[in-house]
Image (cartoon, rainbow over all chains, first blue to last red):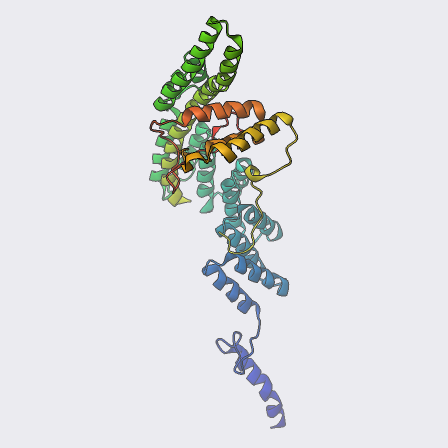
Length: 298
Length: 108
């Protein structure tokens, strides 16, 4: 009987520990901070979009429970919070640290993918390509492998390397015949083929044209208003300088010519720039179209 | 975006270092005089771009040096005209966004 009475508090404690919600709030109002409680707090902040607070709570978890089996989850969630908060540099560093610390973790592949995306979003194309290529090679059967290749393709397009982007999309089509997004990839590949045949305006030709006849380079680049203005402004300065020289009024010629030089040089520079912008605009339009096709697959 | 103190990002276009080149100082001074005394006359905001032509010139000379800066100003003066200007993003105040960084032929 005495032994049974002595065991009673232990049994009660066990029951209390096993009762649902016992870890969150005990009967007399105190909170028992377990790993699960700490993660629940962090997850709640994450769900609410309070990423900075979520990071703090996940870090608290790692400090309080460094040997927990869910330490990899907390590390991954820290990276994810930074990623969702669009702090891509910190996100990439956190995902990289997670992969080094927990190479066998179930989150390692997703972390590699998100690390690559973060680097891509930072326009750190070489690093993104290296990370995502390594992922696609190391885990070809993973869901993330074709997605990683698609990101490499988009990065190549952003770098104006259409041929490389096309090759990567072809790799997706060849390597994953049963891929769900195959039709979209094929559509994007067809658009890249069009991208490679896009018409171009030569910035050099635009500059030369404007040097010979001010404003003509702008018109070549389809900036008609700027072309007319450049022609009139430069025409006035050139005519003024020529008239002053003709009247042997060299001081006035120097002043008028001196003021006119920046407009003349600006007209050459601006024409070349207008042609470059024209090319960029045409490419951006098609890149946006390709991205809108591939984005749902990422 | 992260809610809370995030990374501090330094905007190169906002860096205000002490200017030492005399040519740049003279040019920036002239733009300053224009902005202080000429531009406010009539109280009308005539420039259709943002940054305005004078601020654009200030930035161009400060960041790109006097030579390229003057060329960039010449180009902007030509483009700041009464004709239709397609291809620029329009800001909520109706002005067209055209920073110096969008007009560098040789991007760093």
